[in-house]
Image 1 (spheres, rainbow, N blue to C red):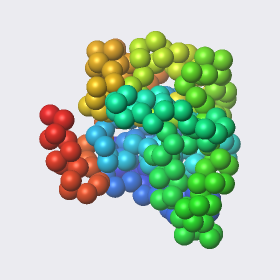
Image 2: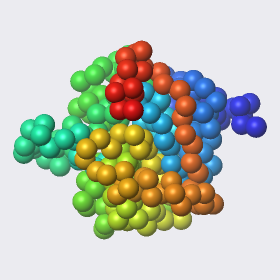
Image 3: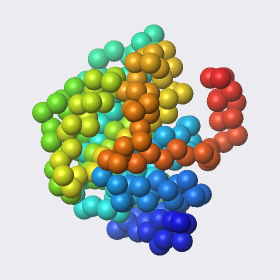
Image 4: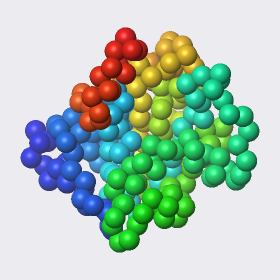
Length: 225
């Protein structure tokens, strides 16, 4: 039983609001993040994957948290073309889920507002690694890497991500196999393949069951079925 373990019931983050999981599945996610060297967290949109990973990471470490995700949209038909700016400025637009998580945790605390979170706090807490540059990266002891939207990662990139982790590091993989859209065939998804070869002692897998967004999400899911 983990429902009565204090570390799964409340996360205390410096200068942020106390984070409390909303159900037993979210408690399972926190337990896995804390106790496993690597965790796969799946669930439909609105189930809290990015918020849970962000809150737990901030509670576990004072170091910068490495984040990455495939810079792939729903369809190339809607691409807006070249984005000017630095690496961080380009990638910030792809890291909106993490920005929303920080906004939820810090907004209104110690005078923080959306602009200060976006322009300062985000870069204090996170180090963005473009996925194309991850081959030369090693995540060291005490460091955390969060990979979002892993359903859009190919099998080759999934293999590369798993091979970047050193002893004592932590890896959080977040995704939903239902959200591949038209960008990648489900059979080519690294997440799909990973789910086929689990279980394994090196990787915990938690699947979130509940959605905490507007009731419109129910219609959104039906449109994909």
